[in-house]
Amino acid sequence: MSGTINRRSFVAAAAITIAGSMPSLAQDYPTKPITIVVGYAAGGGTDVSIRAMAGPLAEILDERVLVQNVGGAGGGVAAVRVAAAEPDGYTLLATTSSTFSLEPLVQQTVYSDSDFTHVATVVQFQGAIFAPASAPFDNYAEMIAHFKETGRTLKHANYFQLDKLLMDYIARKEGIQVDFVPVQGGNGAVQAVLSESVDTAYSGGSWSPHTQSGEAKPIFATSYERLVFAPELESMKDLGYDIGTTSYITISVPAGTPEDVVNKLSDALKQVTVDEAMTTMGEQRFMEVQHWGPQETVELINFEIESFNEMFDATR
Image 1 (tube, rainbow, N blue to C red):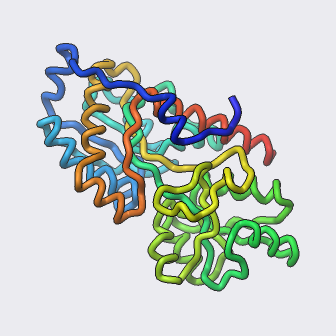
Image 2 (tube, helix red, strand yellow):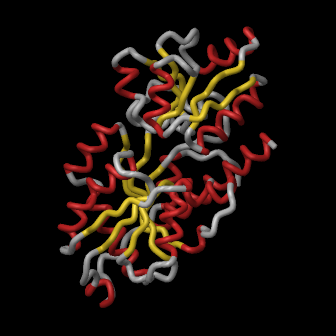
């Protein structure tokens, strides 16, 4: 399988139909509160999304839905906790797809993708590389030309394995040098750009208000296809690459959770993604709220693993 993928056709090809009638186990489920363990700290995009979902999900399932934040190791700490839980549908993991596709490639983990059954993909972040408003380039081609012509090293604010891998990949492909400047989270990346202490940074969506205000400017989308909320930005496909890096929020349960319970959860989450509170949150946070089911989520993670391996091969 090549690294190339059309996001829309991928969804259509992998689409599954959730069963309309559930076996008796799913009919009885749930009978007690459900806990969603979020793999990142409070206040971030994943946390805000899941908390927006919790209320509508509780109404649909007619049971309380609790949210716990367990940050660390790119979602890995939360993954270990959920993997060890009973596979009964009462402990869910909300993290980004990279927890399963990227983290095991860049560090030794005590969990693996096989420890989980994936329920759904519910949000796509609108990832982009952005720069200070004063940057002497306005797009990808100008950025590469600037650093080639000046011989300068591109200083990139880094807090995420995903964008570090991408920028290293681009630098090697284009023959420029990149220096990674560590920052604390997405807010740190934004502040580094606004203070003009770096040339570029990555954000899953928090770049939008700052580019709209004129304090910064978007350079290109890191996704393979163009972004839904910023279709004017060139994508990795537009730039001639067969790969792209897009961050998604996935919902998973421990492996061994009954299939009918998984399907009931996925069906409920599908209803949640069209809830007014969720769509409003997505628009405000510059995130695409969506629903891909269990098989689609497996296909997504497998595609990401292939893409990341291709990028690693090019940077080793």
